[in-house]
View 1 (cartoon, rainbow, N blue to C red):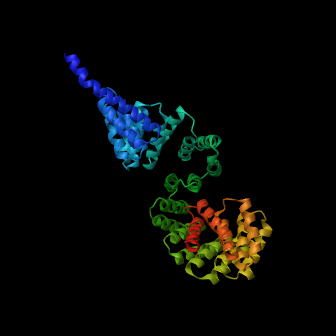
View 2: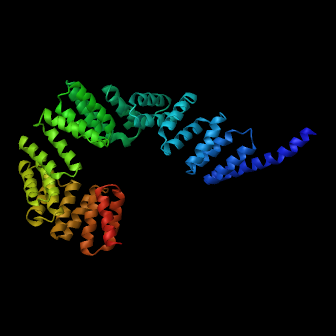
View 3: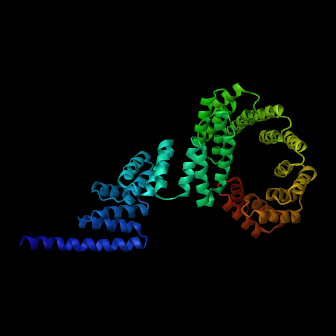
Length: 457
């Protein structure tokens, strides 16, 4: 009788449980994840021997964007010792996306011990350690990850960490990353160059500065700061190391001014120090102070056209266009065969509608004579023609620039403005939309968005 009674009670519950499970599987197959999560949870409550269903419910909740629900359900699965490696990983991700990074790290640490052959856990551990600047633990996680399977991103990350300890091995990791994924070729090439230059430096502090600069070029400012910190430890009187440390700290959201002041006190005639101090003042909006730094650099290296351009930019920001024009012209006087400075002079004139016919357009033509296949120079030539009123020549040269470099967003903006002058609003609209897509977070994209709002509200 008791068995019959139990069967009569449990039978309908089990039937409903399997029905819920079927509903959950159908909903998951159709990517209706919130429905799947509810049905999996309902099935788990009825099919009490199926503790694995708590994980399925949690994974569905996570896929549906319900982080809190995913955490609640996956925690039940963990309490019942039923989480797979995937479930552990998802639980860590749910906490991570809820900005509880400490808990996420602890979960992935436990997961790596229980599931040492699951690569994704080491990927996430490496990210968590990197955020904490725990580079030794990050290196260990990446090494374990690569022992399980090849991965371009892991080789690249490991190479970055090894730049501060083992240049030769770091180079091999960058080579492996770029061979597995061409996306890493450009950064790997930059870092290989930095490592090769560093290997030639007998001075330890200077070697670390070169490595740090390479890391900065690929936007790895946390590691770069570590390199510069070690450089000043190796040589506390290295003005350049202190200056670069100040630069790195700014990229990390810190002030950097104290390190830059230290650099200036050590060597006020170091042009790298002056240049980095100029950048510091520009970021603070103190353009007069930035100008003073560039003028000092120009006095120290009077034959270097780069300081004239930097001074010219600062003059523009202080509103002194006459002095800015003189500075850009002086740069071309110092480097008459370098098309870059002719282009910058042309762009200054065009952007500020200043002496376009007399100075700007001839400068752009000179640049194009020196580098006829450079898309940036063809863009400057087209933009100068447009500002001078020669719309046909403007369109021709801007189209040439775009043919050479289709993703050059600024050329699309300049072409759009040319079309607006011609009254071809449809073509202008298309070019502005394309420019915005090509440079969503950059200045050309912002200008395109502004023009779209102005002309096509």
